[in-house]
Image 1: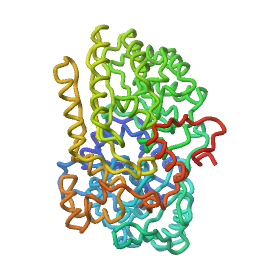
Image 2 (image 1 turned 90 degrees about the horizontal axis):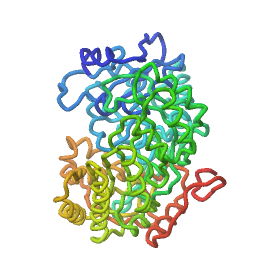
Image 3 (image 1 turned 180 degrees about the vertical axis):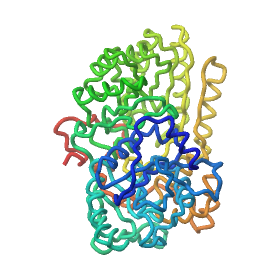
Image 4 (image 1 turned 90 degrees about the vertical axis):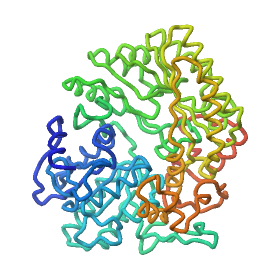
Length: 563
């Protein structure tokens, strides 16, 4: 990022922190996408506050400069314009697989050695956190010295204290990494060696030195102790909102959802803890963006809405559960000027919703439409997946049938635009579908064609479909092993991924279309997410039988997280 560009961004910001290093630990907080995307990521704000709240640390931000950035230009931080290689620590927040190439570009433009084993005692320690780092860090293992497994508030204080002791003690790089590996929630990939069998599958993963056999995910027990909201206010963020996290984790047990398993258990912030954060937002004059896995599931959602409106503020939510939405929430969104409501039935047929344990019925969708149209909200977006396990042609037709009925319902009540966001299903680690293959591309295309054909003559219906090419690359990266590191190095991006995979002696079928054996060793088995493998396997069997699983409840000990 050029100094001129950094100055442009900072001039429109309120709340950024600029102070001299003065012997403190320099931490470059990196987001591998554009500034406007990164500043809409609440995790960046949380870490920025957490790290700059320490007396021994100076945290500065850096973002991916974009495709058009000049190759020879050094990447620098926003706050001081310092090159990345001048910092003690570089920490990436990694949320999306398709950003992996951006990480390599940022390291290269920051004059940091791409491959971790090639870094010297004088180079920064490069770490990563976020969803991708937590559920499967292995495709990135060659490039990172350590990964943060879980929630930053629970891990980073100990991490920083340990690093600080190592730095002041003059320890060498290898000694620092060994010390960091002893911090709960920290995974140092160089201390683990995967072994492959004759078929090219992982036979076992061996820890070296004193590394633990698995790294346990850490999470915050009391969210109220860690307020989470926008720290640096800017009009240049993708979502021009003041973000406030109302809850974390989800207990609905949707079998396709990695976040539902990797961020358990569900935890809600109290209304008393949220009120001061809501009050603090007033001076910025922005709409509040309530963040959480299932906003409408918050036990005090009606009271939260009422308080926001009573303070003369407006609010927005990305989506909500159609089976828990309330009239108060919908009316609050309408009064706030929200023009579109978003729901995620995910599947069109009752059978497929039973497979994925999405406990939303058609009546919930129509009831939500009724509430929204009555409140004056005319436009609606629906999220669907195609290529789910056990899907048939009839299930694709059911998406079209349901959409037609919802469209007719809207037209009868003078509704507006209906948008369908249709995405190929990607099996993710730590879900009951982690053993499943990716659906054949022809079958996914056929399902999408059925839906388009059925709906193409309907007025005010838009279909948005994710790129199939990127979805299949994402699938390989999501469940890949550390051999994919050399594929990432050899390819310039998703468009070159499959050719680079072949050049590296690897087969696409092994990463995409192979049904995994129940006992197979996964690349991510060095991570203990808290959810037991036996529980995930039992959920996979229940999916095939269309058996339901009830949401989390007090005293539940089924999956292992709350133990």
